[in-house]
Length: 236
Figure 1 (spheres, rainbow, N blue to C red):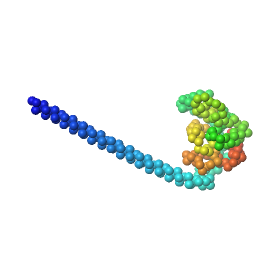
Figure 2 (figure 1 turned 135 degrees about the vertical axis):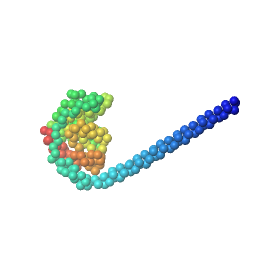
Figure 3 (figure 1 turned 90 degrees about the vertical axis):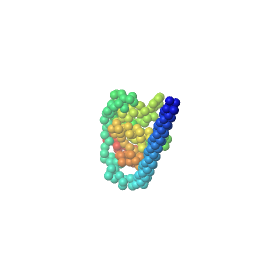
Figure 4 (figure 1 turned 45 degrees about the horizontal axis):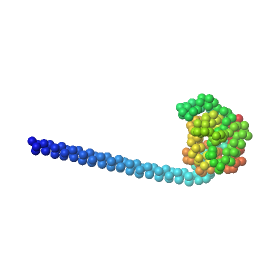
């Protein structure tokens, strides 16, 4: 009886060891498969990044200066991208979306102020003169132009910025410096279907996503003021 009991215990132990061994082997195989998959992802990601960098480098070479940029984009650019042939239209009331509601925008905020122009510009001394020239050109044409830091706001500034974007009849975005805040707010303005004027004195440094968009190229502040003035004539 004891022999049978011992054999039973032994068989149970051997079965347990076998199951543990099989489980361990299965676990390591799964782990290795997961590791191999992760390695493949790393390799593919590296290849993708390399291809993207090559595309960006090639694109930057193609648009090294304004003359090359115009040549590459002549079908998209034509005259309306730097001239005044395509008039800026007045803003239409924005759809009252859940995004606007979640950020504190009321239905009263959707009412367009026909004299309000919101200027997207980096809050940096390097671009303060650009802002002054744009604002002066707007004022001379009878518009009220503001940027996001015109008044002190305690707490989150984004809802106030969003309110100005929604209420404005026109958005003017200074793309110089490729400021992330400017580009983010520009994306929101365009998603809300707001009329936008893009300005830049550095067309060769524009982000790839907006290089084919309509914008005004200026070479000095006198040039900038005149370009803005001509554009605003379409809103009067």
